[in-house]
Length: 125
Picture 1 (cartoon, rainbow, N blue to C red):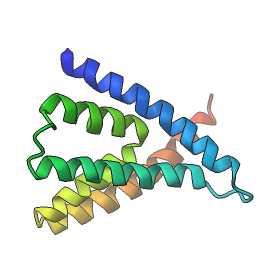
Picture 2 (picture 1 turned 30 degrees about the vertical axis):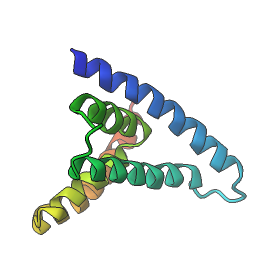
Picture 3 (picture 1 turned 90 degrees about the vertical axis):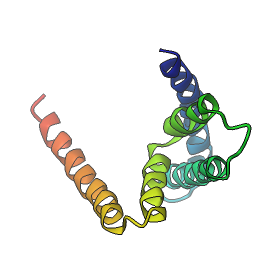
């Protein structure tokens, strides 16, 4: 139960910051390209990469609860894209190239199909 609370706290702050940064960036755009979301996704990838790098290098201050709060909680609330890319990176680091390609492309293709299926299903309601 403690872990759920830790993740929830991190997710609360990550989600709030995601909304704020995305809106601020998008308000500066003159075209209909989703710069806000793209900025948040790339920034989230940088943050989770940094945090994972500290963890991999034996960062002493990164105990399991802190890692859970910052990666699963904050970064998960900020953007799940960062977790997606971090998991892909871990597969590459472990030289699991086939699994990495299946995971990355499979997630993108299946995710797009799922969104389109959800849109179609919503037409019935």
